[in-house]
Image (cartoon, rainbow, N blue to C red):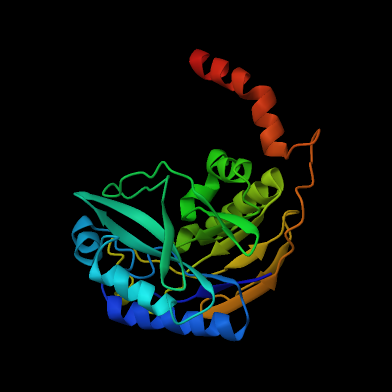
Length: 278
């Protein structure tokens, strides 16, 4: 199966423009014969760092905006994974939708959301497309052990991780190194493909970030279960990447289980005991 990612720039608060880019990405995926294509975190709405701007662009799952998104997917064959600020009652969530051929298959909301105005998600769905089971994490979620472990235990063989990065200059290299290390660990621990689907910032005035100057450098990649990067994007430009992946059976890295599953089974009681005594 071929999968893809669109490393595009999102313009904060410009839904119409972002929706057009979304369709362009789906056209590229169809031309490349990709079965699944992902887009960056909060791509449809932008990812502002203030609650006022986030609420201004957010939309609900029964909204006109959602119907427009689904209408776009109805014209294309690739399954789409794309992020947005979700209005759910009075709460805001950082959410990704999964849609195919005009149908909303489900959503996932960021479980390690660090914007104070985002409510934390606590559901971890897994989907199946053309026989391939996959799950979704969002950006910082991939830096923690349990979210990826939960998806893998539910049968996910691929984890898509849409990102939005705008990193201060003095933290750029440490961020680059840490993120790659985190994702390599998640891939190897759980014997999964891991897709870092990042954004790029070309015009900081469009980014929605007001609290710091920074760089949205990109560096999207598709990583195999051994932690090897099969393909990565170019940096500092919009890009489109694809890779062929194999839905091979889980390798059973430790006594018939993935390393993560075996470690949890054998040691979670010791962890709970250590935390009580900490």
